[in-house]
Length: 118
Ligand code: HEC
Image (cartoon, rainbow, N blue to C red; front, side):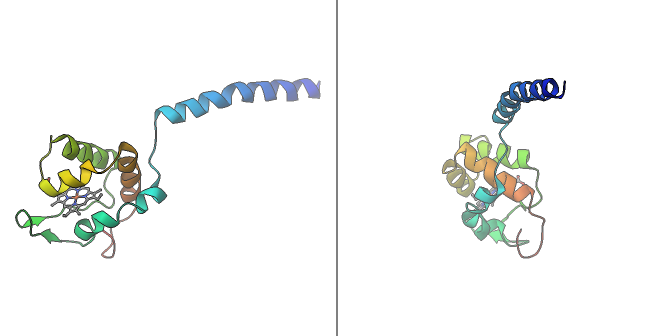
């Protein structure tokens, strides 16, 4: 009897695992560790609390840390597509793949706002 239970349990989990793996693949989540490797190029502007850019005009740089991941991805896609226009951000977003955007968004959404890392 015990053997049958083990067999049924093994069959059940074997049938379930591919479904779980499939569900994860269809809703990709960013990797914050990979995101951290990409944010050096963002920190020059987004890394200082209250920082303002001087180009193309004096402009307050919005904070990214603690920001919602979906919001960050949506914003980057809008800069890339031209739906949002800002020359520096358009150039930066154009250099990022969809995976880069997810990873960066995962990093920033999980990094609390401090004075050291915005
Ligand atoms: C040259 C300075 C500069 C660099 C470098 C830079 N940004 Fe930005 N970013 C800005 C400015 C200025 C804005 C606000 C523009 C606007 O109002 O549309 C902005 C806006 C954004 C926004 C929208 C935020 C919001 O609250 O709506 C996101 C997301 C963003 N940047 C992500 C990034 C990422 C990710 C990187 C690095 C890959 C990066 N930025 C690099 C200057 C910069």
